[in-house]
Each structure stands twice: as structure tokens, then as C-alpha cells.
Length: 345
Ligand SMILES: Cc1cc2nc3c(=O)[nH]c(=O)nc-3n(C[C@H](O)[C@H](O)[C@H](O)COP(=O)(O)OP(=O)(O)OC[C@H]3O[C@@H](n4cnc5c(N)ncnc54)[C@H](O)[C@@H]3O)c2cc1C
Image (tube, rainbow, N blue to C red; front, side, top):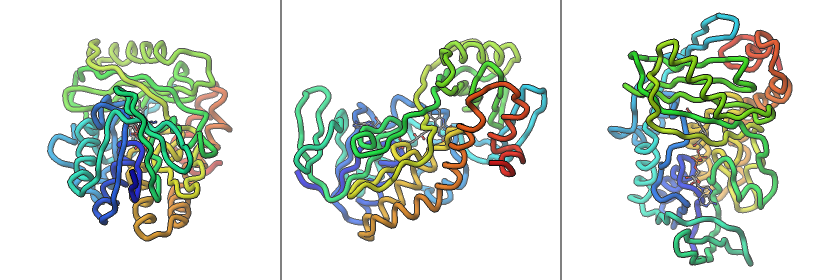
């Protein structure tokens, strides 16, 4: 089988590339090992509002759980710090699926339950998970959008090896909340806890640096204890999830005819963990570079746009977050809501 472009991974990064490439008339195959695009959700689901100006078609009815205004931070030293953070908490199940549906309407072929396994004699080897049937595919270009633990990145050069580990419950929210809530605590080492409102529900989670020998689920339970006793949420677990957040910065995004987008290329913020918008934007940059037959432009544009901010955050993680004491010194230097973050490297 021969395609113009093979896209591996149908998250926001891969689906965006698939959508724009198909729209430009290219023959695109997209594969994902999931049974259903967007499910299960492994995310707290916040996106900044700007992405809706650029991609209004990504926001059909049902894709947004609620709007939010600010990000409000609770520090261990008792301050409450607010920062404007206008955006949406999504229903990613609907959001991700919609992008892939847009791609399929433009002619992209989608194969689910299909896993990328490697390369063989200039072809890509895929395997159907249920039947174990192997498929050999040739493509002029490959968009690697296979997420944080990208196998393509690993097989072709540098890959992310340091992550934030996360765990999250969806719980009933006790009050109407129009802000994102962030907690910094001594018992959440190298990371933070969050309450992201979704109407009557909330995503309640923690991310920690796995450098610390501590079980993420025990950290989540302690966080849930704190926020339920403070009355934010009720003690009922409706959903459980978690996952890996790349925490090293960008890994060379262009490898011959392979373009790494989103988490696969490390385009996720190594401290905040925000990566949905970056995945969409790098998916678009990769598609445009392929359409214009200038893939080097992808490398240049993606590094120009994200290099400084993501690599700087990755350096801050190494410099400050491998010890978790003196938090009134570390947190202002490693979190974007504080002036110190922007002043000091
Ligand atoms: C708990 C948690 C909370 C988060 N909260 C936020 C948030 O609030 N806001 C935000 O912006 N970001 C958040 N993120 C990060 C965000 O989820 C990612 O940055 C974003 O999903 C990256 O999109 P992507 O398209 O690059 O990869 P993904 O969305 O991870 O998609 C990759 C796809 O590739 C598929 N795949 C993987 N390997 C293979 C293979 N070998 N063969 C075939 N298919 C494969 C997967 O099934 C998946 O569908 C969070 C992450 C976690 C873990």
C-alpha cells in the first residue's frame, strides 16, 4: 500500500495534520491503536481560548464542558495568586473525535486498532491488534504523532526519557467554579495538583516528577483528602485516568521524511504539562511544510515558535525541581504566574 502521507496517532496533533493534508488533496492514511479516537481520555482537558480563534471548526456543540477565566494558585506559604487564563475545559472524547471526523470528511483513511511496530526495507510495518495481521505501508512522508512515549521517536533518534507522572479522578464539584485551581504542596514533589471544573464535575489530579521515589496514586489520594475536606469536591470517584507528560523539551522534530508533532516531538510544556494546543499547532506546521514540499521549514518554524519557551522550562525543571524544599524559592522561579519565572533562568 502506498500513500502520500502516513500519520501515526490520531490525537489532536495527528488528526490536525491528517485533516489539513487531506483538505489539500493528499492521500493520507492515519492509524491509531485505540478502539475509538479520543477515548479513554488521559488529560485534564484545558485549552487556551486562542486555539478556538484559529480552529473554530474544532469546537462543535458538546466539545466544551465549560469556559474558564483565570488560573488561581494556592501556595504552600498561604498566598493565593491569580493569573488570567481564558479558555475552555474540553470534553476531549468529543473534541478529538471531531477533528478526526473532519479529516475523514476530507478523504483521510482511518484505521483503528492498528499499531505502528517499526520499519522494514523502506516500509512502515503496522499490525492490527485483534487479528495480528501485519501490513506494510509506503509513504512519501510520515507524521509521527504517537504521543509522549513515541515509538517512532525512539526508533529514529532522540526520544523523551523524563516525564511527569500523573494520576487523576473525575469527581462531583460542590460549587460553580469559573477558574482553574492549582495547588503547590510539599507532598506533590516536582509538580502540582489541579482542580479543573467541567460544569458539575471536576478533573482532580496531580503530576509529580518521577525522580522522587513516591507513588503518584498515594499523592493523589492525599490531594483528594485535602480538597474534599476544603469542600471543593465530593468524595466520589466517577472516572480515573493518568498518563505521562514529556518533561525534557523538544527532540529534533525532523528526521529525513519523518515529522514529529505534539508530544512525540516533546512539544509539551515540561512544567505546566500543557500540550493540546502545541500538538494542534505543530500538526498544522507539519502539514503545511509537506504541502509546500519544504519539510525543513517545519523544523525551523516549530523550533522558532516553541524552542525558547519549552527548552527554557525544561532547563528550569533540571535546575530547580530536583530538590523539593525551600518552596517559596523554587515555585516562583518555575511557574509562569510569578514574575521571578520570567526574570531568572
Ligand atoms: C493527566 C494529564 C493531564 C493533562 N492535562 C492537560 C491539559 O489540561 N491541557 C493540555 O493542553 N494538555 C494536557 N495534557 C497533555 C496533553 O494531553 C497532550 O499534550 C496532548 O494529548 C498531546 O497530543 P498528541 O496528539 O501529541 O498526542 P496524544 O493525544 O497522546 O495522541 C497520541 C495518539 O497516538 C496513539 N499511539 C501511540 N502509540 C501508537 C502506536 N505505536 N501505533 C498507533 N497509535 C499509537 C495513541 O493511542 C494516541 O491516540 C495532559 C496530560 C496528562 C497525562
